[in-house]
Length: 402
Image 1 (cartoon, rainbow, N blue to C red):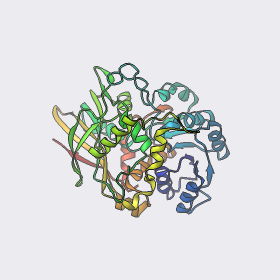
Image 2 (image 1 turned 45 degrees about the vertical axis):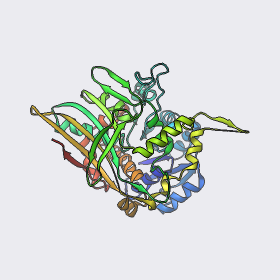
Image 3 (image 1 turned 180 degrees about the vertical axis):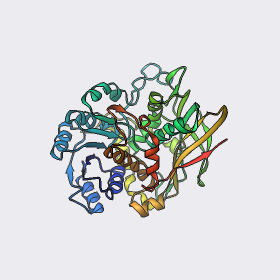
Image 4 (image 1 turned 120 degrees about the horizontal axis):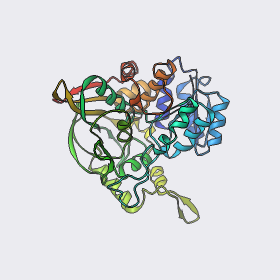
């Protein structure tokens, strides 16, 4: 398989590091806007022939297309912030190759009732074009990171193997990670974190369809495994809620994240001051987006690994019935930062995200997953994916709740 990797930030680097020992990767072209960054990642991999580097501006669709044609790639892997999704997605369509991302095209809140009704939903742009992709015979596999991605695979596994009826599928994410040496240091892209945490969260119910609530709503205490413990989780906008109901039969879908009081406080302050705004404003003679300034002021998550300690857990809680009896399980993956740094030289959050698209590439390359159009991970058989997780160093667990 020949892959054009668009973006070599923390997750892009981890994708390349995980892919480098996979012999079926014939070539993975490392691209980024930051020339020093792609050189750094290439040197870390140590295989410039299989991992060549190219400068890219992911806003420029024609440039993406020209690189995809130059290297005759089979797949364009989008490892950028979702604000770049449209040109990368459209470039893959025009070139006629498969496409993969880890977060879908962005939403826009309902202008009249943002905390009650959906406006433009995550992924609407992509799913509206599904027929075109299907007719062209190519695949856009959207939302294949950890959440969304692995969590959706777990939902499909539960539906196929663990339950006869499903009342609720709820993704629950929590960690006990600590970044030492900083007052505030997010371990993932702050741009993306602001987007998903301050937008109106989406909930899906069979009787009502998709609807929204205020940010940080419906707090609950969820107990995470492997020593992480009980954490308060709140509603956050996330792709699983938009993906799962398209492919699986259930009554309710939610996503809740254990952000912590400090993180929520910072996000609320950014919103109050307008620093979450992604539209450029004029500062003296310069136009700059406030959110980009916030991101520039914070440490790069890709270089926090040696200051991070603890574990992160991503998983899918499922409630329903099996053989007429009530049942609840939590299917999860826990990544330890110390182990990820030792094995990959990448911190736990980006590593836990990155292994999933590489498994997806593996399954596509070997004809185990097949499809056309625009599909989420839950559209495919879960077992081949889950059977590979331990081999990739990220085994899953299943915790019965009752």
